[in-house]
Image (cartoon, rainbow, N blue to C red):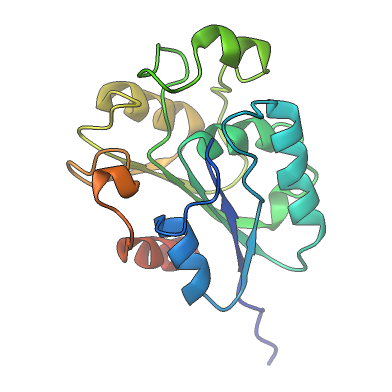
Length: 188
């Protein structure tokens, strides 16, 4: 009897530079089959380039994949899902605290005009072609809970209510996020 190989976890970061203390970085250090989409930083907002980076990463992975996206990476995955030839290889997708790019973000984040001119808007609202789970926060400064829950419903995603975890980043007190591994296992 042949057993299928375990999925590779593909890390899709948000609109940030590399952060050593971020839960995605720490997760990548613990998991055996991991691949990452390189962070492009806040200065490079080109959505098409980021979508292409996901496709390029998928091209280099053999076998099944579980995607683990955070923040703007969740919206990147929604754009990528509309154009990829790899959707059938995705066993599941964890979308942790997606932002609401259709409302003004706090100071220091891209404006609606910047998001529009960089190809992020409109945010895709069609069901994703693979199983997905959106992890939500009650107090995320980048997206009101009801709006993120509506986005998850549009994507056909299950919802995991994390409670009051801010934006699930170092500024919200997350370095390690052990629950990520349990959610990945559930999607695998």
